Amino acid sequence: MTRKRPPSYYRYRETHSTIQITLTDSLKAIIDEKRGTRSYGEYVKKIIHDANPSENEKQELYDQGKKEGYSIGLDEGIERGTDVGYEKGKLEGYDEGFQKGYEQGLKEGHKKGRDETIEAIQNMNKEGTLKISIPD
Image (cartoon, rainbow, N blue to C red):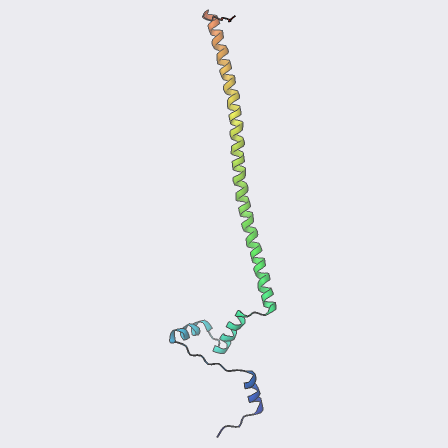
């Protein structure tokens, strides 16, 4: 003989399905470890809920990701910009320094060579060894 149940029991059963799953011992151990103090039903609901967030939760997750991504991107952009700017400045500074050094070296070398030549001519003139011939 079947037990008589109230109508609310049958209404509840119509709107609340029961599922049954068969697991290996190792899979059950994993679920037991992950679920903590929650019941199996609560844990499965959490898995389903996390896999299918509501529109508000999706928007919150999107906003949170956008904020975190913006912050990370800004920090990385500043760091990269600083590195690129430093390298560019170093290269341009090197080029400018090399060019100025080259020009200054030419000027000083030219002046020194001219001064040494004039000094040598004056010494030769004093010694009487200077002979200048002008071609026709």
